[in-house]
Image 1 (cartoon, rainbow over the protein chains, first blue to last red):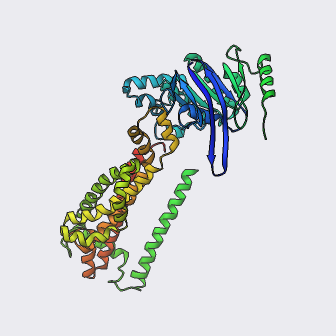
Image 2 (image 1 turned 45 degrees about the vertical axis):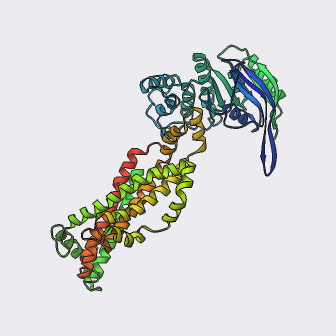
Image 3 (image 1 turned 135 degrees about the horizontal axis):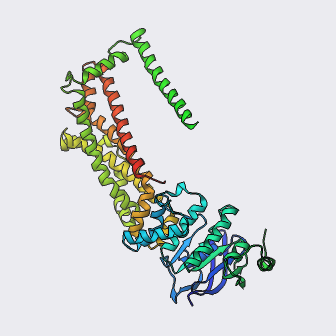
Length: 248
Length: 258
């Protein structure tokens, strides 16, 4: 199996008591599969992604990437965050070429490569701009280009469009579909937006709220690009919404 | 609109300055409230300034010679202090063993003001360039280390994560994340240290020197030449401002996007 999430449990311990956020989370992802983790609430999903990224330690269980246990962050797993986290002191080009530069790739080669991804996300002409000059959507594009450019085996996307306005969000969803058609990657995408999940996913994993555990899986085989208003789309939306327990 | 506003505030600043000089002029030249040896009038200070550009009376040097002497001392101490302070501060902040190794001595030395070193340095090194540069070095070194240290320490943890995710090593993260993100703090340190350098210099020259702005003031005081004392003070202020401006110019070139 390409990426194996093997029975992960996570409990945060603090003076206030134990907070169990992940419970028996167990699933596999095939190579080049676009998997969306969908669930209500603020509990567990980002933690799961951080565990896969190697930034956080699981309480029990294992993560295997190509049968190798994940223990620490590495360039085979790139992360795109909601609050983007570009390096503000670097230009767009500097941010996108950060990964390849860390791997010691020659300047001429890595910049040519970075330029391709900058073009791919539609930021041609902004190579020398600093992040502070860019809009939220543009920053997120840089984040995506940076992640792709480091040639990870898995892309981990943590509610990447959560901070964008609705219009930009739709636009970015279309972009992601276009980019992943152009360049196949294994993607694990976390969202609490049901439409976004159905629009993007090969497979949706629905998670419950605190502690998060897998409730149900849906394989979405609608042709792309998908139509938010098609009968099938709306039926899926209705079905998934009906099983999700929203808590106040 | 914004431009207009800035200009308006500039005008206010200019008015303040004019009022200050005017009041000074009134209480001295017009009403004569102060004897000339206590507070000379602004115009007499101005003429003394012009005269001092070429005159070597009473201290054996023209104004430019004093400025030059002071600059050489200040910049020598400053450059060495920054040159040593930067790597020490960065290593202390980034490598824990270095921190524990250096900190006890550093914490003790930093509590001693730079000018408190004057007597011992004059005993060791005389009253030449090296003694004064050493006094300045101490102040600059401490100021640089403290600011650089806290700058590096405040590196955003998630930026470090992101760098790790993209495969950067610890040294690379220092070079490409911690130092660039600390640049504003580092420049604050450089600016504060520049002030300290100038301060230390004048103090050192007041006590032990044969040339320099502080020395010029001291001699003028002994001769009862208040006009020259004020010329010296104004020159010190102007030079300090110019040095700060030069540093800010460099900062704007180096610090971008933050």
